[in-house]
Length: 337
Length: 265
Image 1 (cartoon, rainbow over the protein chains, first blue to last red):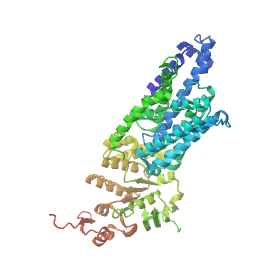
Image 2 (image 1 turned 135 degrees about the vertical axis):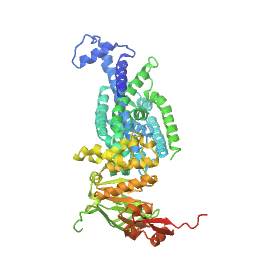
Image 3 (image 1 turned 30 degrees about the vertical axis):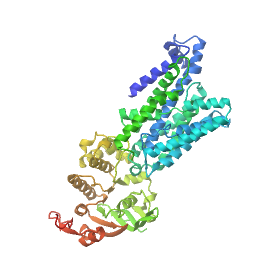
Image 4 (image 1 turned 120 degrees about the vertical axis):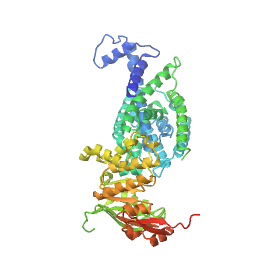
C-alpha cells in the first residue's frame, strides 16, 4: 500500500509536470528540478518558456494539490477518531463549507489585516465554529450517533450555503467569481506564497496529530476506557477539533471545497492496513497526496484546453463511495442505532 | 485525614451522588483493601456501577470523599491513576476493527516510557493465557461474540498489571466455565496482593469467591461483611423481593443462594 501510493504519487507528479497546453518532456522536468537543487545535467531545459511554465505554473499547482490532499486525508482520519465514527468527514459534516464561508467573508469585505494569512485565518475560524457545532450537537454520552452526525452536517451545510449565497449577493463581480470557484474547488492558479502557508500549517498540525496517534487508538475503546488507560480525553478532543479546523481551513482557503478525500482515503487505508493510527496517518498522507495529484491531473487534461473543477471530480467518485459506506454501515449495525 | 493504612487501596467516605435531580448513591462508605476480593451486589438500579465509576474516578461524588492510597482521587493525574488501577466496564465496544491482540496491547499503554514496559510481552502473554483467549488474538475485535469480547477485554485489563482491579459484571456474557475462570483469576490476583472489586449479579458466585460482600439497595449500603454474614435468606428476600433458600456448598462451605421456586408445573 505504502509502496503503491509512493509510486502513484511520483508518477502523478511527473505526469502533472509534463502534461498540459505546453507539453514538456520528462527529461526536461527532471533536469530542471536537478538544476534547481544544484545538480547540473545535460537534461536541464534551455528554453525559458519551459522553465517558467514549470516553476510558475505547474510545480506550485502540483505541490499545492499534494499538500491539500494530504491535509484533507489527515483531517478526515482525525475526525473519525475523535467522533468514533467512520463516516465523519470535514466535507460531509460541514467543516469545509464553514471554512469556505469564513474565507468568502474575508474576500468580500476586503479584509487583509493579516496579509496573505487573512483568508486562511478566516477559513480556520469558520471551520472551527463548524467543527465545534458538530461536536457539541452530535456527541452525547460519549458516543456519536451516525444519524445526528449527518443531520448536523446537513444543517451546517445548509446554513453555510445560505451565508455564501448572501455574501455572493453582497460582493462585487470579482469576489463573486472567486466565491463560485470555492464552491467548486480548483487548484488552478496556485502561487508559491499560498503553497508556503499550506505547507507550514499542514506540517505543524500533522506533526501534532501524529504524536497523538497512540491516544487515538485508545479512544477507539470508548471515552471511559481511554481515560482509564491514562488519556486526558477532553483535552485530546479539543486539541483535535482545533487541528481538524486548521487542516481543513488552510486547504479550503486556497483551493475551495474538495470533499470526500478525508472519507475515501482513510477508509481504504483501514481496509488494507488495519486501523492503528500511526500507520493510518502515514498511509493517508501518501494516499491523499497521490489521490489529489491525480485528480488535479484529470481535472485539467480530461477536457482539452479547459479546467474542470476538482471538487466536482472528487465528489463524483466520493458520493457513490459514501453511499456504499452508509449501506454497509447500516447492514452491519442493523439500522440506525 | 488520619494516618494512612498501607493495606487500604481505595476509600469512599460518606459519598452521595446525584445526577439530574435523581440521587443514585446516598451516604455510601466502603473500604477497598489490598489482598482482598470485594464483591458489590444488589438488584438492578441499586447503584453498583455508579459506585464502581466513583471508585474508578469517572465521576466525582456530589458530597463525600474518595481517596486512593490516602490521597484524594481527584488529585491523581489520569496517567498516575492508570498505573494504579485497571477498569473493566460492562460494555466493551470498539469503533474500528482492531485485532484482539492490539486491544490487549492497549492495556500496556500507561507503562509506555517506564521501566515496566520491558515486561510488556510477558504481561500480555500471561493475560491472554489466563483468560483463555490465545486463539482469538488474530481476530478483529468487533467480529467476536459477546463472551469472547468480554474475555479479550479482561485480558486487556489484566495486562495493565495494576495493584487495583475494578470489574463491572465481568461474568455477564460468559459460559459457566469461563465465569469460574474469571473469578478464580480475580481471586488469585487478590491472593497475590491486589485489591479487586467485582460487581456481580450471581450471588452464589459472589459467595464462592469474595472475601467480602457489600450489598447495595436503592443507592445505600445495606450490609457489608463476609459472604455468610451478608447473604442471609432474610436479607436477600427483603432487598430483592424474592424468597430464597441458602444451601451450603459441600466442597467450600460457602453459601449457595437458590430461589424458592415451589413446584414446577
